[in-house]
Image (tube, rainbow, N blue to C red; front, side, top):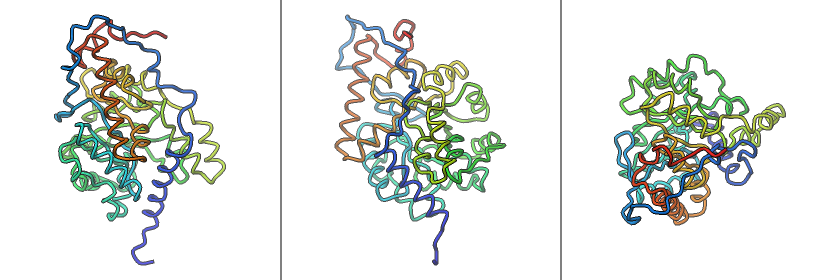
Length: 349
């Protein structure tokens, strides 16, 4: 068939499968939790605050945000993804939230699909993050590809995601991670926008956080376990019985989000950190901020909302903001930085 790109077709089909499975199947971690349940805020019954004056705004990578919330990278490459990204971007613009898109590899392989990611016209002011799999740097991708996805999206930064378990379970996955850190370092040095490195839900341990910081990344998203299990997702897709078995065996694999975050903040005291992986409400968000995150990312709750309507996404954003405001008010703190003071959050288990 003239112009038919089998690789692009396969990638697009995979993206459609991912979206369907995340929305319709139970692919959340069942045994491993985020670890945030082991922390509790100390209630202040006499907050010296006017609750109406609490300001949630913050700055991340030089961009002012209405709240320290990131709509984490999810999707792109299909008609359904186009609609979902549009709804998310519109709400991100309204409330001043940051937003990442799903892996743009499918748009590199088929440029016609870039429109399923293109949301800048809907959200001219947001912190918008492009996204590619870091492992693709070992499969012919380089600086030009990174620059292209940033420019096409009109993004403010690039996420390079790390997903060795997902690739191991995925039928035909890309499993050559050898020498990847050096290539990430080169992209950090040469790309004209900041580079963020994230996992996809299995966590980044402190030694790797240090390595990434030394390589020049602008921020790390620890993306720990406790939320969506991409081993389960790929196991659901797999036809090969070995790959299906791998998905079952490693369904609960990973480092809990809270553990990753605490260790990362100790390892790199001054590096901007994003906490994601199983966050479900504003109380989770506030706990990660108290533990050292600068930004908190949610994916599955926003995906569920965006699959319904823009109004449902807006309601979710308002609920998250109300929950975060309540945490500050009921701990007697007027800022996110103040949440990190001794005695505000304590470990209880």
